[in-house]
Image (cartoon, rainbow, N blue to C red):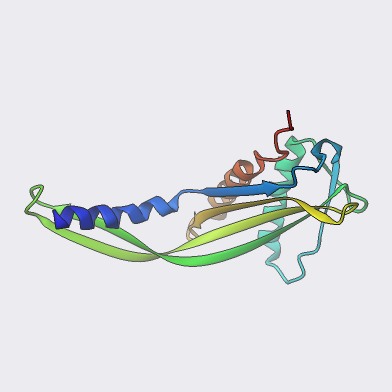
Length: 167
């Protein structure tokens, strides 16, 4: 019984690999009035290739929501931030009959990437929408596959923008 409990606990670590999306918004904001957006400076040096990929993925989703990017005078000001954390992943397996075999656990380090998108109303001078998506990264994959994963993550996050209207 102890082996089964240990194996269940070890296998539960793989559940952490799924995408995780959270968002919040200003319930008083009139999201129907936002038609244009502009990028805000992030304030630190970035990898230009990764920055271009993230912006491209966000811009594609915002265009699907009817927002148009402008250089100045946008109804929304948008900024993103990124973070990469390392977590231990536990993988367990067993050999032999159900209760009398050998159990083994392996550990590895996985990188967890977080993308935070914030939208500000410059007229009100306040935050009106913030979303966060977290996903396991695999830097060993080719850049094309990584970009596809980025697109999927951003699409999943921005499906919550604009928030459903009050009824």
